[in-house]
Length: 473
Image 1 (cartoon, one colour):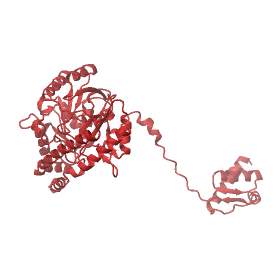
Image 2 (cartoon, helix red, strand yellow; image 1 turned 180 degrees about the horizontal axis):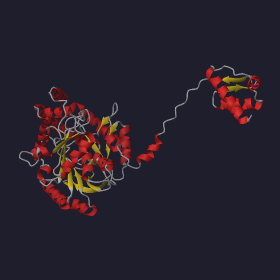
Image 3 (cartoon, one colour; image 1 turned 30 degrees about the horizontal axis):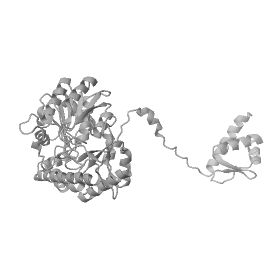
Image 4 (spheres, one colour; image 1 turned 90 degrees about the horizontal axis):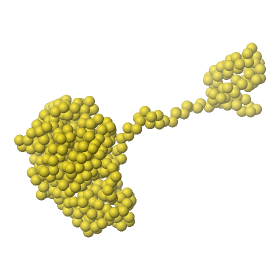
C-alpha cells in the first residue's frame, strides 16, 4: 500500500472520529491504530500530526492524542485599505467647514460660527409654522420638483423687488445655501476648469468648488468689494466662465459692493461670457440702521441676460435646520440646475418647504427681522468696544453695517496658528484667517463672530480670553 494514501485514509478516519467526540476525548493509542488499520508507526504518526496541524487534536507526549477544544474561527480584521486605490485622489476636504460647524464645549466661548445663537433663533415661531404646515391636507404629498409655487414667488419677490424682472419660474427651491453652491459649481463649470473667487472668501464655497473639481483663482477686493479691473484681468488670464462673490456684507471682511461696482461686475462678466454666482447670504443681516432699501439691489435684479445665478438662503437668519434656499437662474443654466437637483435628490421635503412658507408669510417673520437687526447692532458695537479696550493689537479691517462677523488683522509676524491654539486653550474659539484664502494669505488674520455667544457678558468674556491669548503669543 502506498504510504501517502495510507496516511490520507487514516487521517480521514481519525478526522471523523474526532468530529464525533467531545473536547478532551482520547483517541485510540498508536498501537491500537496500527493493529486496527494495519498501518505502520510512521503512518499513524503522520496522520495524527496532520490532524494536529488542522487544530482537530492535541497531542500530549506519553499520554496520546485528544480531541481538541472547540475553537471558534476568528473573524478577519476589517481592512478597507483597498478603497484608497479605488477612490483615487478625489479628496473632499471638509476640515475647514466642519470646524465652523463644531459645537463649543462646556465653558468655551464661541467667537466663531455662522448662525445665530439659539436664544436668537425664532424657535417658537418656527414651531408654530411647522404645526400649521403639517396640518395642510397635502403637506406630505409630492411637491413640484422645482418647489412650491408660493414659496418660489416669495423668493422671486425678495430677490427681484417689486416690479423686478425675477419671476417664480426662475426660482428653484434647494436644501440651503451650501447645497445651492454645490449645484451651481457642478452645473456651470466642468472639472478641471478655473473659477474666480474673491479673496478672502467663504471657506464653504472653496470646499464646494474643489469637490466639483474646479480650480479657485483669487481676485482681490478692497473696502468697497471686489475690484472690477482685476476681475476683468482674471477673466482674461484664466479663461474662467464663473465668478463667485458675496456682494453684500461679504464674508469675512464685511464689505458691501457699491451700486456702481455691481454694474461694472455685470459688464465685465458679460464681456467674458461668464456667470456670476451671487451668494446673498446676508440679505437679512443688516444692522438696525441698514434696511434692505439702503443696500444696493441684488445683481440678479439688475440682470436681464441670465448672467447672474443668485442664492438666497433662510438658514442664517432663522435656524441651521431650516435648510431652504432659493436658487435663481434663467435660460439653459436654469434647466441644468433643475436637472441636477432632480438627479441628485429629487426635491426638498414638502413639510420643510411648507414650514418655511408659513414662517416668512407670517407677522412673526418681520418681528424676527427687527429683533435680529437690533441685536446685530448691539453685539457688533460690544465686540468692537471690547477689542479696542482689551485687544488693541487686533486691527479692525472695516466696521461693517451689519453681518455676523468682524475681520481683524494681527500684528505682522504673529503666528496665526499659535494664536488660534492659545485662544482654544484659554477657552475661546476663533476662526483662523488662512481658511478664507484660496491661495497664500497676505498675513495673519482672524474672523470674529459676535452672534454665536450667549449674550453680551459672554461676548466680553470671550474678547478678554482672546486678549490673553494674544499676550501669550
